Image 1 (cartoon, rainbow, N blue to C red):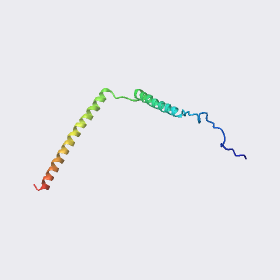
Image 2 (image 1 turned 60 degrees about the vertical axis):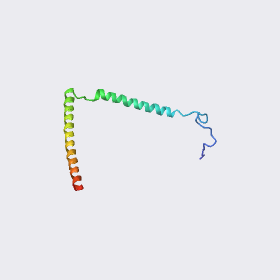
Image 3 (image 1 turned 180 degrees about the vertical axis):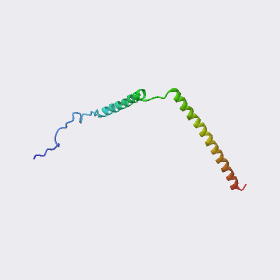
Image 4 (image 1 turned 90 degrees about the horizontal axis):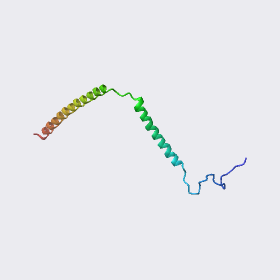
Length: 98
């Protein structure tokens, strides 16, 4: 059995020691750009063909429900905040002895 070594052999790379840089970085960059463009192409297809958009009537109904819920929730939080503020104020006045 004969053992071979790479010591003393000429380099296989044609660009080695000549100051050339590998083009792998360029190919990697192009692959990333391709993946990004594929992603946006898929997004466009999905938005235009696969999404079921609501009708105008449904959209307005749901918007009204959301706005009414927000108004009710805002009033509730305001009332609770007012109660806690008055309770804390009464407690602090009591704690001062006054």
